[in-house]
Amino acid sequence: MKNYRGMLIVVSGPSGSGKGSICSELSKQRIDVTISVSVTSRPPRAEDIEGKSYYFKTEKEFGEMINKHELLEWVRYCDNYYGTPKKDLENKLDEGINVVLEIEVTGALNVKKVYPDSVLVFIVPPRYEDLIDRLRGRGTEDEEVIRKRINKAIVEIQSVKEYDYLVVNDTVQNAVSQIEAIIDAERSRVIRNQDKLDKFIETLKEAKKDDRTLNQ
Image (cartoon, rainbow, N blue to C red; front, side, top):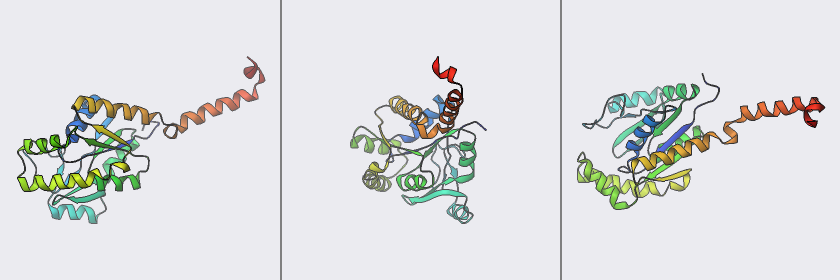
């Protein structure tokens, strides 16, 4: 175990904002960052990989995980269930690994209640039209599902004020660079470095005992 606990970085944004691509690229560029893999009842898309994109479960299996208290949080989103496995997340944080959790707004705010020191980042595209273009460009959902996701996006935007940071995804690399800066800044917060501060204060106390040290 490292001498510090990992940070929990919660990333949200409307469907089509590009948050998945950003999180994936971030984990490639930072060896101190890993992605928490969520559980979902939605059918896998062609590009999805079991255990990497999501852990895919039936609604019955998802319900069993809820009953066994195996999920940190869970929500029903656009007719499917999504949740965060609790044990794996805690193990990584205890090992000093920064964990990125990509979830929707309701789940993010629930996580904040359990982990008050988590860092909440909201992703948006430069323009509303970009959101629509990205959703339709996927070619994986019909117009009814797209309509639901757009309506959900309008609701989600109202919760931005509950987040710590807003990142505009004009390009994936720019967005990744912004989140890296956020991680570095958050790591330097006094509240996350109390052990280092305590050690420095201890050296001051020792120096105070030796007048010669203070008079040099």
